[in-house]
Length: 183
Ligand SMILES: C[S@@+](CC[C@H](N)C(=O)[O-])C[C@H]1O[C@@H](n2cnc3c(N)ncnc32)[C@H](O)[C@@H]1O
Image (cartoon, rainbow, N blue to C red; front, side, top):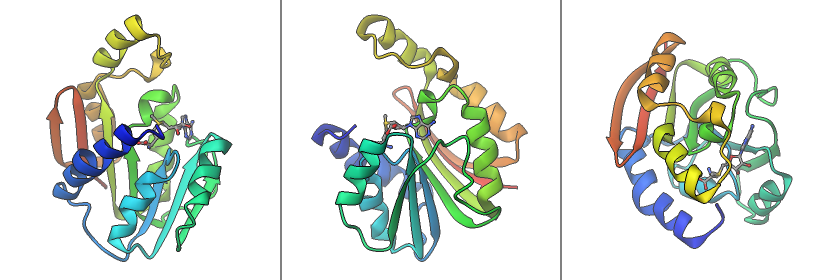
């Protein structure tokens, strides 16, 4: 996740696609879930957020992110299923670059994100379809948790039934990128 090719993809494909879906507004309070080594924070800094918080389960990733010395950015070791670092209704935007399929309790993460977003707040998320991840796992033994390998159509149904409206989406090459609004 800290490799140059991963960052290349994030910079040239994922972030521009999320921008096309509406991740463009400046001056927002942003939470990034599963921020890894903080490259997403570097990209999101282009939006001049009012505040940025990145959380990740792995202390070594958070240490790498903190070493970037970004101004106006805070990085915390946290489990995404328990976002007690954030008040109810405190965030304008939540961003996820390919994280939920690593988390068996991804539904709880969605509940927490819904809680911390302001009314009308936006969730921008990129995730692969679990069918393809599962197929690759059989050959490469990447070890994703089976409970995280959701199909994108089931993911969409879940979000729609749990307080989110899908505004825009792109489905391509087994990946889904979404702009959602808290309703
Ligand atoms: C594939 S990496 C993606 C990292 C970064 N978003 C990127 O696109 O490069 C998945 C990240 O999710 C984090 N993660 C996994 N389970 C988590 C959890 N329960 N809570 C928070 N972060 C978690 C991992 O530590 C890892 O940094």
